[in-house]
Length: 273
Image (tube, rainbow, N blue to C red; front, side, top):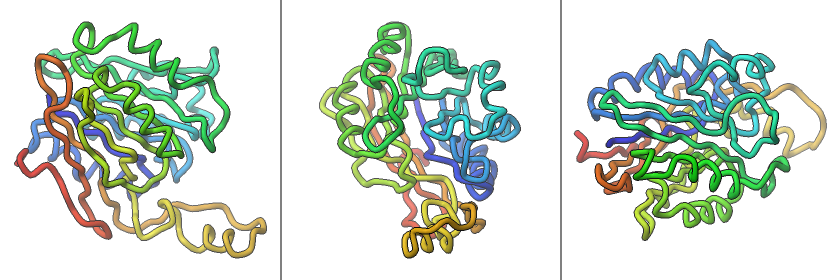
């Protein structure tokens, strides 16, 4: 299968680059499954139902979240009825929504999409490793799932790397989100799992983490209360990772970074063209 994971969608530029480019990429690259992290899609803070529907209609098979899962209060309600929207599995019991979902591709393959949130420099949640272990035990790769995609929404690269090795051989892809900055360490781990520390963001890179530069910069300089953070409004760049899996094992055969748009060096899986 051909899998595409796209990093945190930030505000209108992120949404626009998804709707503008993803439909054509699905056809051009013959993608089987697309997963997008959408936790910053509503002006940089959370996700609304209308925006979630927009991402799904543009070609996403599932949308993952993170520490901004419920910044938009309507998410507390619609997440329960949207089976393709996944918040971190290690939220406390009773939190609305689900931490994993299985999507079926057009060819009938089953893809487990799992979302966990790290605990280093993040909100204190339940153990993400135990949560991942539980979800994978219920839907193991090669037995129930034909592919497994794990979004590790975390700050520390050490925690993300630990997750990669923890799940090596048991997931098709382990990819980090949250820092909005793409890393250059995409590779296939010894057990066959594709890995990337951070997918980066889909948004305007002429910014500070997708936000207009003035207010974040002022906060670093003055450390006083100020204006609300607003998402930058320039042209967006599409960032993520592309993986091709082995049909027999569900593990990765190839992996490539995806960066399409201004401000960053463009790259994509050229052998898919």
